[in-house]
Length: 439
Image (cartoon, rainbow, N blue to C red; front, top):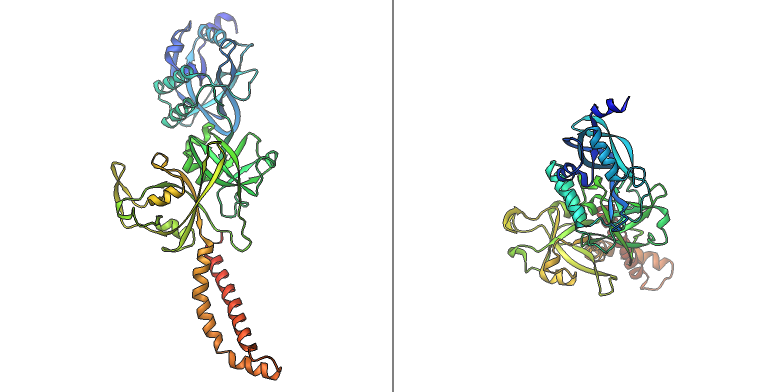
């Protein structure tokens, strides 16, 4: 094809960075026409281009299985392509690649640009650059979830670490979870994040405690997060596939691995209860969550959260409270009528929130919830112990007969009866609790 023929052949160009803005494209020589918003699968948005003058970052796309990048598909002419090549520093900063972009089942082949020498860690591109991206995304009607994702990137403060941490993906195998919310990392991180300690998972000033497991098949730059963790951190659903980052911080909090019990845990956000339940010194859970924990209303739960001291060290806060299913079906809450209790939340009284170091500005803090096994054990052993002990009183006479034949001490029958009653009650209690709460 001659240069003359190329000049008249329309080209499809996929823009994912500042070139999504119509104002930016209008400054280029040549003609362009936005077709629609399209998505590019198995790539993620990154900022690996280091600008020579400012040292700030610029947008790039990196292969990443399961992720996707939204952008704008343009129809451009030859002159516009030449102008784009010059603007993007073709051969020096960026190179052209062919990609398949998709929209409502329609797949088209287009070209786009990707950074040649990628800089890691990623670089903050500056607020103006990100604002241009957001403006272009809104102009071309990209999905709201993706616009929110770009807005969230803007919240990163210049001068601080940018998009540090791990890229979040969904958990593929929970066999190592043993009932507790799980984070899975590459085996390269065993020393930094041992599996006998809990880890603090952090995003946008929210944090939650979770257990750690390791898998050699996981990319060292990624981590797998359980759905419960993703829910409270706000990276569930579509947001997960855009390349969300989280920060992990090691703690000294032991991962309690019960030999007899591996209770199911929940990760929920804390809210204050409505007035009807605000001064009862109880916790309110949705009835379905109470059943999921394997307990009943009136039983005790253990609530654990983490906060940070002045040195940014993680400290553990624990509260044990009775749990109930709430007293109302709907309440006027945060300016609107909502279901109460919500299945997404745990409602904690004022005194309990103080113990957990959750203040007014930190409502919706994520907490780890599990049955209070010690309290359950004591409540069950009293009930079963009395019943079984009374039934074994009837065995004292037969055991006395055996003692007489053995010339044993007169207290022999009493000691044996008490021992059998105690052992039997412990066995029944352990079996009963394990059958209800074991994961």
